[in-house]
Amino acid sequence: MGVSMNTMVNRAAMAMQGEQVLTTYDWEFEIASWGPALYQPAETVYFTRAKGIDGVKPLPTVNLITIDLRGYKLLQPGLVETKPDDITIHFQDFEDMTIRIWLWDWLNKMSSLTSTASYRREDLFVNLNIYQLNSSQQRVFKYAYQNCLPNTPTDTVTLSSEKDKLGEVDLIIASEFMLPTPLNIPS
Image (cartoon, rainbow, N blue to C red; front, side, top):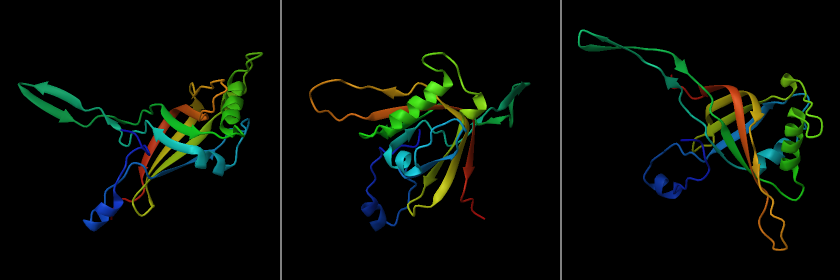
C-alpha cells in the first residue's frame, strides 16, 4: 500500500476516543537535489500542486533462506532489500502549465524530440525525499529516492469548446535506490 491522500479519517471521533493512528494522507515531499541541466520551478509550485503519491513501499523485502534438513525446516535471515518500485506523483497543473513545462523540459533533455541528443546521465537525475507525518504533523518516516528519472508521465489534453477541468498530470518516477528511514525510533 502506498502513501496516498485519498484516505478519509474522522479525526474528531478518534480524538474523543483518545486514539492515535498513523494516517496515510499526511505527507510531505521535497526534491533534495536537482540535476544541473534541469529547469527548477519554485518549491512551492510543485509542493502545492501535488495531490497525492502512490507506490511507496514502507518496508523492505526480506529474502529468508530456507533449508530442509531431515524433515525439519530451518530458517536463516537472508538479504534485506529495498528495491524501489516506480512511484507516481499526481499533480494538478494550472494555466501557467509549470508542471507540464517542467516535465517537457526534463523529457526533452533525456532525448531531444528533434535530434535524439541527450544530456549527460548525471545531469538529469533528481533525488526525492518523501516524509510521512503523524497526527502532530511531525515527520516519522523518510523515503529517500536516489537517482530518479521520469518514466512515462501521463497527461491528456482534450481540445474542445466545452470547459472541462484539465491539468491533471501523473508523473511516474523510476529510481535506482530507495532508503526508508524511521525518524522517531523509541529509546
